[in-house]
Each structure stands twice: as C-alpha cells, then as structure tokens.
Image 1 (cartoon, rainbow, N blue to C red):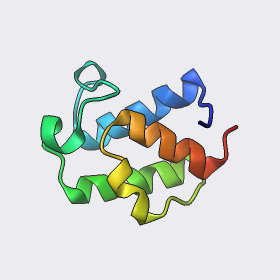
Image 2: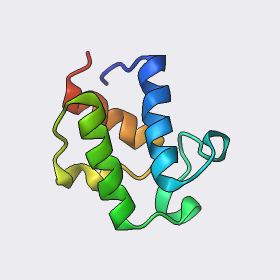
Image 3: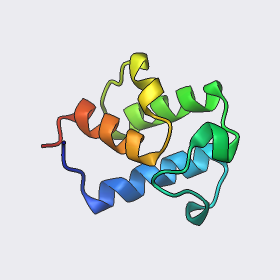
Image 4: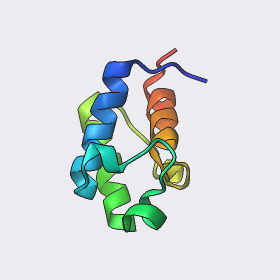
Length: 84
C-alpha cells in the first residue's frame, strides 16, 4: 500500500470536510460519505476534482466507487500520486 504523510492526510481530510460541509471531528476514516454524511454523487465528483487540483494529479472517475470514506480516498490519492 502506498504511504501517505500525516500532513497529506490532514490536507485531504480538510478538502473532504470542506466539500461535505462537515467539521473534521464529524468524519472518521471509516465513516461513509453517502450513508453517514448524506453526500451525493455530485459531491463525490467535487471531492475528486478538488483532490486532483490540490495534488496536481489525475484520478480516473472509475476510482469513485473506492472513494466512499477517508481511508478509500487516502488510498486512491496515494496510488494516483505514486506516493511510495
């Protein structure tokens, strides 16, 4: 599994919380965006686009089904950015 720094996890969580309009303490690594936080597919695409811009990477939209919680987002971003 690719490694991800603490600084990057905080930055990713901040982006996700900003888009979902949630406080960071409301989101756990395993809480589900759709089921636990009422996020819709438009928010998921917005998260993907914001992460691409923030980290200057490209994330294929086929990765969206893996990006259901912070753990999934961390993994997809790390893989897309080749953080080894």
